[in-house]
Amino acid sequence: MAGAVIVGWGTALPDRVVTNADLEATLDTSDEWITERTGIKERRVGGTTAGLAVAAGARALERAGLHGSDIDQVLLATTTPDRMIPSTASDVQHALGIKGGASDLNAACSGFVYGLVHAHGLIALGARRVLLIGSETLSRVTDWSDRNTAILFADGAGAVVLEATAGAGQLLGWDLGSDGSARDLLYADIGGYLQMDGREVFRRAVRATVDSALRSLQRAGVRATDVALAVPHQANIRIIDAACQRLGIPMERTATVLHATGNTSSASIPLALVDAIDRGRLHRGDLVLLVGFGAGMSWASAVIRWEADT
Ligand code: UT7
Image (cartoon, rainbow, N blue to C red; front, side, top):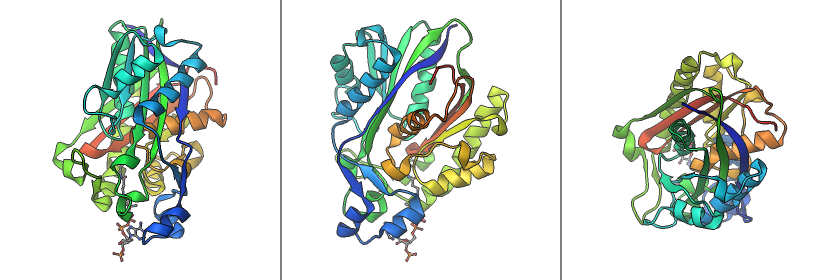
């Protein structure tokens, strides 16, 4: 069975910046509270899920030196499709000139890592190249008068191109899970706004992140101290802090971007990953731990050995 490696990456954010000061003007909240309790200073808002996905996907293709016609599957992780039917991946496929299969994947904020594992599966079964995108327009399902959620959620996209390789590939260990009994802790009905029990989600998020990461590390046969870069879901800096502390991974080896992006669900992990690459924090041969959790409640983690030149 063929292994896979990441050969291209790209992101896209809407132009409109909404700062904590902007939210102070319309909500009973403060920059101080939001910063202290979440780590978020500003977020981006606007666009469509397909539009952001196409922009991020095009950059990932360009970085890989490829065209849409070189891709045989596009997987779009999203909780905010533009329409019920068809998949938003169909719009992306059409816009980027991809000839192969296209489908959406919804595992909430764990969606990108779910997609990463699925993409390795597709390549193991014979696909040559998969374009994996996480794209969200959560601002459309956020009640901007609800301070419980409006301070957190935002829009953005991140993408990677995975390619078949002769050797075993980059994926060393993975873990995908879900506990459907907790599905009502964070949800949006069709046509409705996000509803969240923040405290309970927080409590479970730390545990899910740590437990899933440990399972992936164990499957990979490595220790947390071997990880050069942890790329956690960007929901709350306190969740990231607590989880990384329990795992024994210092913040110097953790990618964070949420101060500037807010929580972008499926897009948050690729946004943090690409930001770390752009800052020169990732090198060929590095061990990378990607770990997410979210509504469902779902969780997902993967340990990869970074193979691309950055
Ligand atoms: O992608 C996964 C999705 N979601 C998450 O990961 C979210 C996980 N949860 C969280 O990030 C946090 O629970 C929140 C940021 C949502 C809330 O932070 P918290 O530290 O858990 O605050 P809390 O809900 O315990 O509320 C503490 C106080 C309350 O006031 P009292 O009862 O102590 O007087 C709230 O009413 O803070 C108040 N509060 C606010 N104050 C100012 C709640 N939201 C706000 C706000 N501004 N936006």
